[in-house]
Amino acid sequence: YADVSTKEVKPETPTPALTKEQLTAVLRPLRRKMTAGSASLVEARDFTLIFLVSRIGARRGSAMEFTWSGWAYDGREAALNFVQKGGGGHTIRMSPDLIEVLEDWRIRLERAMGRPVRPDEPIFPWIGPGGNKVPHDPALIPMTGRGLLDAVKRHLLGAGIRGYRMGF
Image (cartoon, rainbow, N blue to C red; front, side, top):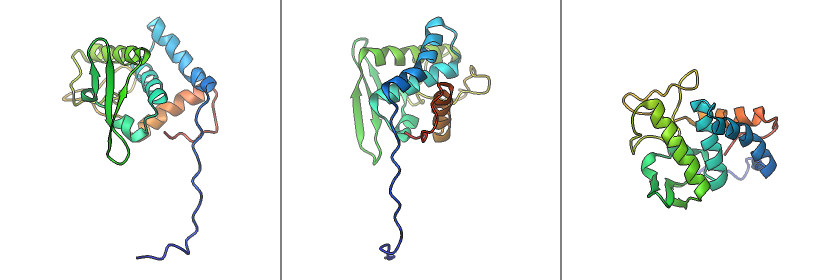
């Protein structure tokens, strides 16, 4: 075993959480576009991603692996099942506003693809250049960790929020 007692250990830099006001500033312009029907597919995906992750506290690795098979909705109640860091399973019971946002995203995504989503496909897929084309032949491609960070960063910067480590 290596002697690690002589190595300098730097303290972990905490990632500051957004305040409620900052989160509202990030989501408000996207929500307006969603309500007006003028949101691109990328904007709709990003709104859903930021809204969902901010509400359930999911880590980036979990968000990348959310699939439609983990989304259980019976028309009244819903839950999202996913794997947490370390491999343990986790189930989140979803509030009505989360159900509405995720269902709206599923409908928009299916409309863009011209077919229903498949259970094994990612909830947050990569969307091609231009913001409205979804490569889906033979299946949707999941976003990468970098893609997730870039999506969040783009909207933070758009809301004038700087100086945060873009991690979740």
